[in-house]
Length: 301
Image (cartoon, rainbow, N blue to C red):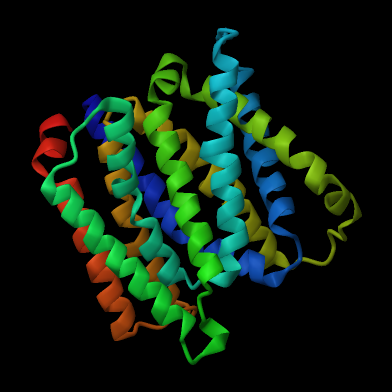
């Protein structure tokens, strides 16, 4: 199988898992057994241990001293801020609204490509941004005035999810040279070590005092999925894909995430489909399609 085909497959699988992860994290955070920062710390520590364990069986790869700062910043943007905003936001946003907002990643990538790579912004791209922006504004207004408070999305939750997508897009767009320089295992070892060091001082007290006999089997299964599938596997697959396809194409696979999340959330009864959400989603996705399929993006992808 060709390298770029493997890259596409890796991104498809990663974003499919991310779609399921929206539902899993919604359940974990609404149980309120552990705070978002404690969940993040367990996630980072668990995946980090797996990467360091696998790395111990592989040839040692030296990291240039000048690259440690870059990897630290990649950890802050690509994991710490991305996942902290997600875990804090998810109790305050429905899975469907969350998936709609996260589909904006290709638009963020467009702006990052303009500033970092000097890729021009065409009229079609600008029109796509404006269309998606209208969809998000409509979603915010509709959520803020929703009648059913049990499933209402807060503006704060939406803003945090926008920050989440922006941080991850910056990670995808800015750190490809560093990612391509090292093996996936080496890069991820340090990403998760730095992330754990950032989170541990904030979570250690809660994790030490927590009664680990309280959670049921469902909770532990979801936590295992969060650590192994949504963190270890996805954060292996995404840099694997980044090495083989452009950031613009990587971000396009964010389309898979809302399809999976919406389907699962409706099936398990976490969300309902309304005409307002269909309209907002169609507006956002329409803008994303205009941006992604603009002539300059296709020419360079």
